[in-house]
Image (cartoon, rainbow, N blue to C red; front, side):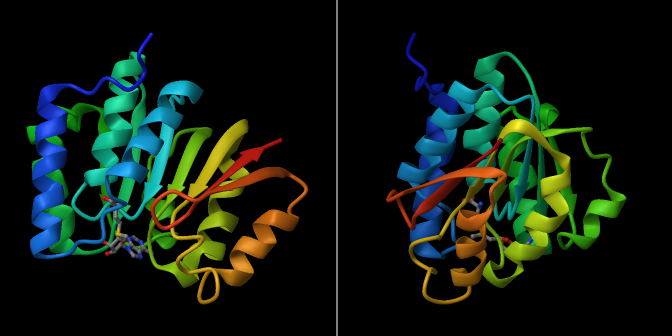
Length: 193
Ligand SMILES: C[S@@+](CC[C@H](N)C(=O)[O-])C[C@H]1O[C@@H](n2cnc3c(N)ncnc32)[C@H](O)[C@@H]1O
């Protein structure tokens, strides 16, 4: 079974967002990390995914496309910037994935209080303001399902700066099994044990 098969529609929209990002960056993860997220979501088969940092919906399309290919599930994704939030809504709709996505306009983690959150999160993806990651983790970890994945981007690119203490803490956390993958800006994958 080929787990990497994207529809032409999704591939075309992702390619278009990549081209737009070259003209005017909206900090998308890029195709290698996007494919990695898709593959992880296909293999792990999460039911509920939480993303912090939607931007224009690029990584969200990879994740929701994986949910759709798995046969169902839901993506909650949070974005604080009004214009990027609006563009994400258009992209999710064009991709035909909007029915699987609850987009939240607001600042994490404070906005969590207003969310109709799932009881348990199977996969969380952090890709927002780097120095807020400890706050994201503290708010998300109690909701993580045993065996679930916390995935964090930029752990290599920002290791010596805003992400250092957070990444060290994740490695020292005895509730997590952690690997760092040198794809894109560096992807940390932590499995809740
Ligand atoms: C790196 S971009 C996300 C890229 C996106 N994951 C993708 O690959 O398509 C980070 C986004 O997070 C948003 N952001 C930053 N801090 C945030 C916070 N605390 N809550 C919600 N959104 C936040 C920014 O406005 C920005 O659009």
